[in-house]
Length: 68
Image (cartoon, rainbow, N blue to C red):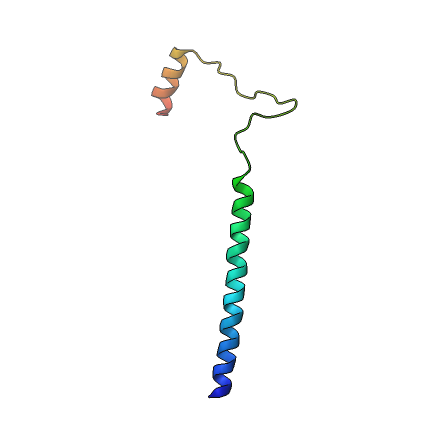
């Protein structure tokens, strides 16, 4: 019985250590990515890839045809 309790305690301690390591690792990663600004304007030779070529009548026709 004593051996069983000792083994259970070892498993419990290893489980707590691994869970804590995982938790603090996730917190570290979250803090690292929280500081990153995702919506900054691009730097360097950025190219605009969207150009609206539709007038109002074309957009209305696409809306009625496709249901967008």
